[in-house]
Image: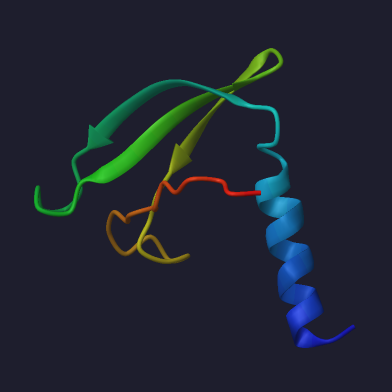
Length: 73
């Protein structure tokens, strides 16, 4: 498997867990500094609730941003 295929598999498996989940809540959580809040979504998937936290990177170096775009498919 190529590095690209390894990365695609990792992200598909990791984020694929959320397919079918429903957003049931949202809040901003204080970061180290208020100018870096963490966007936190609460998701319901079957009988389980999970937190979906947007981070700047995989190391958790501050809150992040996600684009909401129209699905033109």
